[in-house]
Image (cartoon, rainbow, N blue to C red; front, side, top):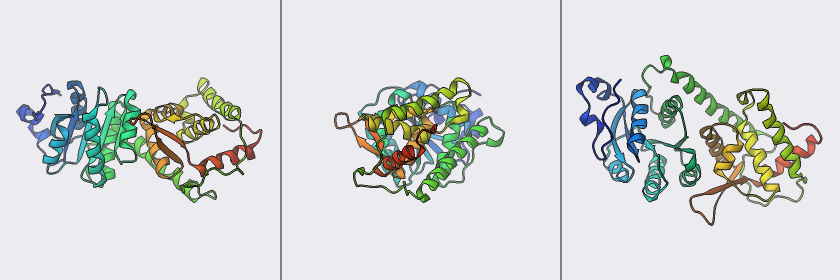
Length: 319
């Protein structure tokens, strides 16, 4: 399949497609608007949209996107592809996108390199925007389909059951279901850990040494020497341990560091982080010295629960 024309700011790629692509682009599927900051970024986004069987509305530069969105009558999704730096144009666009997504005007996906995790996470916050970090083709296609499904649209990708991305889409759906199930158990458990607690950490919480927590983390990482990490992937527990260790050592943990501690792909870690923050297990704190970064810490009740767990487990290997 031909990849089509080189990115031209302000020019709709559909206007310059050959007639051989007319059936693919001019169909009844919903349009997707692309905002990209480079020709290569545009082409990656374009391939994802077409591979999903969807129609592109237009491709514009980041600077032009807010005005273009305002003129768009309807759109199923906005795909933002970023290669470069986090600047004012992108910041302004994300402000508008978070508002529009909150009003269910369209779904939104932001694809970016790992170097932009912190500023993007700080800007997007708790908005229902899908953030992809260094994602491969199948994950990108699956994330778009999932974003549309979350929005409530009954759209489907072209024969997804026969495409190689079908496996990844099922995995992604299972991943989201697992997050929801885990948080549901936490919210109905005896500790009610999912309820936000404003009071400071109580003095009755058992004292736990940082070395005890570090020993558990080292033991968990040691398993990867002998078995595939995928066999033991548990990002929620790994993030809880990392934040407890940081709390005891009086350290602050930015989003990027917490994603590394989760020992799963960054996109997966971000989904867990957003869900656990929404449930009140984690708390986000803005960096007072850098508006483009946020820190994550344990909610008071979560901290107390973890400390009691370690105290009760005693010398038993907590892995």
